[in-house]
Length: 246
Ligand SMILES: Nc1ncnc2c1ncn2[C@@H]1O[C@H](COP(=O)(O)OP(=O)(O)O)[C@@H](O)[C@H]1O
Ligand SMILES: [Mg+2]
Image (cartoon, rainbow, N blue to C red; front, side, top):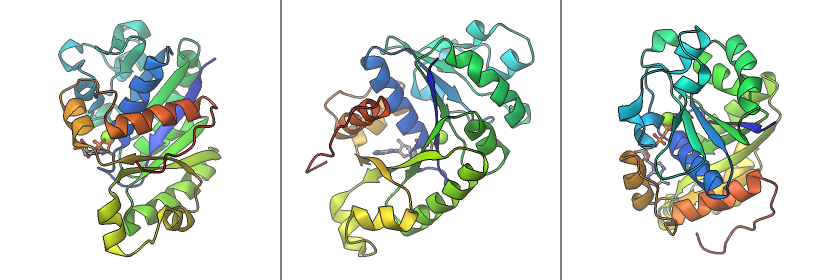
């Protein structure tokens, strides 16, 4: 049985989908079978970010309503052997209810080493659907106070959903900008303010953003991809230290 992980946050635009795709590509690079599940009904983005957009015929709602077999709605992602996508419905009306997701997840876990649920923004039904079936959560946050506060709120909501194993991913970290704002003197300040243990830090990285926007894998030596590869190793229980410089 594989491991289920939700990639979530209170706020939109902080990099949940970017972290999900990067972790998925990095885990596949380690030889794992990985399923990305796009839970953002109506605003799906993982098909574009994984280069599968043109292939899509079925999505997760077709599986749930019995219009196709699960395998027909799961697409291999070009550039990463072992990485697959189960896309979200194109319409928000077809959102998968949490109870249904809870029944689907154990089936998916049988066939993949990792199932990564990419959560939509906000803390509504879509968030609950994405989170309720996960064994652990990565809460993505940018290093600004508003986002850090929302990460703290998400922590409490996840606990109520029964997800107790959660850690923080700080994304789009930019050292000079971070210290210039003066709100936090160092990363420990962010961790203290959110009350969540740190899992990893991914730097601001235009090469990774540009690759993912067009559905390509990021260069292996791009700084954010290297950070996500370290996080993939940690997800599998390896003790990988944080580098001195990101
Ligand atoms: N580490 C990063 N460096 C540069 N740009 C990033 C990084 N992470 C995310 N982005 C950009 O931020 C925007 C929002 O990212 P996305 O993953 O779609 O966020 P979310 O899923 O939380 O809404 C995208 O344009 C993406 O390319
Ligand atoms: Mg997203």
